[in-house]
Length: 443
Image (cartoon, rainbow, N blue to C red; front, side, top):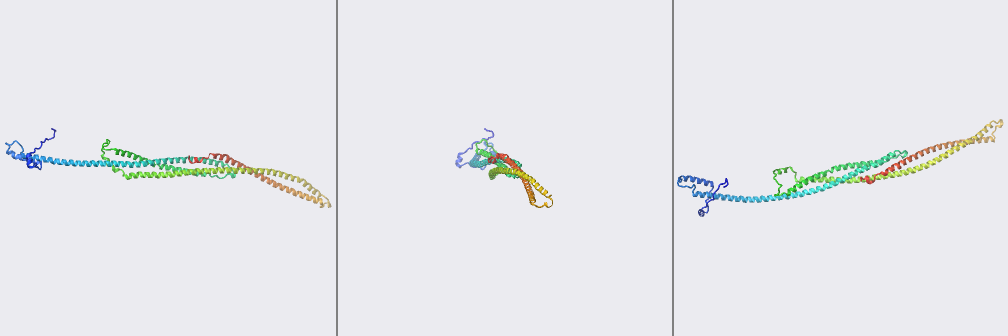
């Protein structure tokens, strides 16, 4: 016998009574029946105390057992009803749990698909942004190389200018190549600054990578949640997990966050592509402009050297003519001086004759033919000497002008020789190191 249990004997059914009455008489409450039996026993027990050994009468016994039977039947009916309700509730809750769990697993699957779609799109944009950033960095290197390459033309042009500053006279003309190189350098530097700023703005790729990393982690967690079932061993109760849902964003805000990131990335990608096209055009046009200017300057140098060579040849030819003329003029002056000197003796003779004839006495001092002839001879000789002296003055003046022209020609020839040395031997030789279009384009 187990402690705490009370053994109750089986109820006894009187088949005769059941056959006569059809059923045991019901009792409203077993406790009432017990109280009735106790009262009856107390009233009759005093009278029959000496005659009865039993405590209850047969009627009391039937009533007590009938009450117990009815109570057991009621409890059994209620138990059956509770069992039915329990089975129905269990079936309903089991079905609801399976349905909700199936729906939750389905929602997780849909969520995984959506995360995968956004994650794939982020991966695509990250690759595109990485490629675009690499291309932009490559264009930045081209700009830096092109900017460095312009230092050679600038050094060449500056050296040419410094060399040509040593020209003299009319050969000291103005050069403009340095201005073009300076403007190209300023344009390349400005474009390089824009490129650096654009590369800094393309760091939106980091935002995409962070978003992709978050989605990758969320995908792993949701995938693990999707694999969970009722037989999983790594599940446990987390009563407070549902309270955290008030602190998270909604699904539309989640989508908007990624869409905004992708929109910004697409805008920066478009700006980067436009800047790369601008860089390529600037580099190509700048290189072509510099090479075109170089060819123009080289052509100008060649033409200038040819012109100076021709001019130098003409000056040297003219100098030879001047020198020849100076020699001829010097000989002419010598002859004129000799002629003037040769006229002095006849003039002295004629004038002496006239002087002595003025000493003739009285009537002998007449204007005879010898006198007239001597007067004509003296006048002619004086005119001749005066003419020769005037011609000698003109010859001396011409000789002075010829000497001055000789000096100018020699000075100009020296200037042209110096200019040819600077332009041909120094400048044009230095310009052979001018960068090519490829180097000026940053390659």
